Length: 379
Ligand SMILES: C[S@@+](CC[C@H](N)C(=O)[O-])C[C@H]1O[C@@H](n2cnc3c(N)ncnc32)[C@H](O)[C@@H]1O
Image (tube, rainbow, N blue to C red):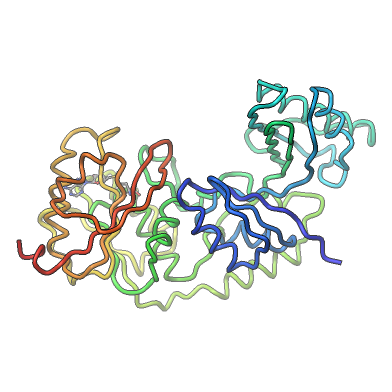
């Protein structure tokens, strides 16, 4: 008999509908959008596929238990009663994170500690030995949410955040998060066809994520997931899912991707990302000024994330003016700009015809769509 699990899958705020569509395509059922995520049901294979295939998700959490916490001692009692020996051995390591709101507990650190103690005590009482804590790279990452009197405890299938695809060797200063970039492309209806440009490509996140969408390449193919080290891991099932994903990659696509940046350091990061993501046949990078750039042909899509001042203060207004100049060379294109500072958009000199509210890291942003008309292109 196939077991049905409940999954809670977080994403960037504003991308819930994209994530819901992705989950529906993977076969998730009973979908329920929440703020910053989607809840759904599915079998073990759904969890594995979700880690491998979801572009807009941050993690994939499988619910292990839900219970009422009316007084402090309830938490230890319920967690201790759960069958942890199914999920962790004494040789494994664990880490517990917690979020707490309107609960008898006020301190999330104390909640996490109580959960850890209950699990460790249970395993010790069953085996005489205990698993240890590893906060950086645990075999079993757990998360508990306490909301009013209700607790839900889940294990995180991915381990490290799903935005870490494996093509970015170092954590660069102001890149667009990979999962957010992919989610924005899907939110705007990017279809993986034609020429896509990013005139301020930085480390190249839009380019690589768009190329992977065009190639139907699963974003998790190059990385490891926590669930592969769990006692109930099904090797054959995972092997088949990865095999199907490898077969699904289409390297013979006609879509092309072109990125420009005037900063040598940013371009060098983009080159590394393009090489590491196996997209160098599709993605071309150029050094130059956006205002002077004449693309080889009018693009079908433009996606860009210009500087908006928080980190890159000098020349920000000039960058937005340059963007407007470049956009006028792209009549008929589907142009999208991620903006975290509304006061800057006027420097583009065009009016957006569509806006989506999204979050990028801690910043409330908008994805703006511009329809570049022939008249604007001449003016
Ligand atoms: C916020 S970053 C882009 C981040 C990028 N989305 C990523 O994935 O890393 C903005 C980029 O715009 C570039 N830029 C700013 N003004 C420019 C201009 N006038 N011409 C070309 N590049 C420009 C900067 O060098 C910087 O790399």
